[in-house]
Image 1 (cartoon, protein in one colour):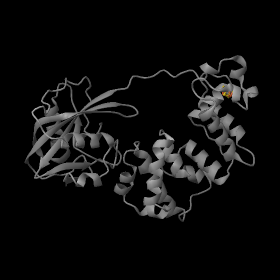
Image 2: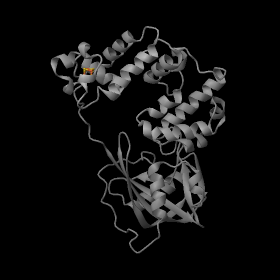
Image 3: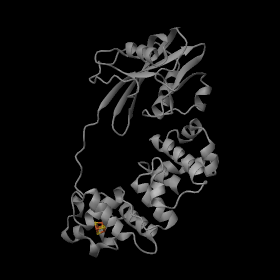
Image 4: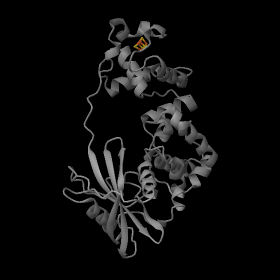
Length: 341
Ligand code: SF4
């Protein structure tokens, strides 16, 4: 149940289902997961995104194995102290799995409460105290799930089905006819853009991979060396710099492979991939945790984020004269870190 709550954060049920079943086949007990290396855990999570969830869940399970005798603590304070366990997850697991009178608030609950109270922008403290008022009783987990389900099925963002709602007589927004405006939409912030050069260093039939530091974005995942372009920097220069600064290797950038676009929660990224030839040096992981030379067949055994898989697929396409030589426009941003991408 804890696993499903973690997987379902920011992710649709239909997407999660196959991952959930595969995960349980691969890690049938808490102990097998606790003993698994992070590489295996991230490989099982590959494609589900938001990889910090997998890293934190793995750390939390290890802590349960080592400090709680392998039993998930049913004490809200102890459970909340585990890595990655936020207020919502704690409320869900404690109330649903252990029958503890703990509150929870997620996006669906927020919308339902905003309509019950006819509040266009309910603050977190008000939402949590309303949820806390509902939790006491014999079946707090059922109550919490009922409110979430109401938000998911009837009290939907657009055109709520108030005629079928079992609590409409308690709903202030329904009485006033304001339910379509509750909660008021949040102002969308512009999403920053990162323009990244990706180096596919090819040598004797293998391609160079790096493992990203655990505390970086996509931490623990494997990737091709890359750097966010500096203002005025060409893709070739940024790719060569990525390999030099990240691995102490000198390479020469050659033909462009293509561009892959990917949107993260807070940033849109354009990855410009370019083939590179090894000139000199032995790899040293200066900005990375590890490196490896991978054959095309090896690639499937590494945990690669979706965008990196797409780059690998582009690179595997037959080369032709159309192998892109055009240089993308100079990036508007000045992001410089190797690990911002
Ligand atoms: S009456 Fe309508 S707006 Fe109010 S809780 Fe029910 S579905 Fe939502």
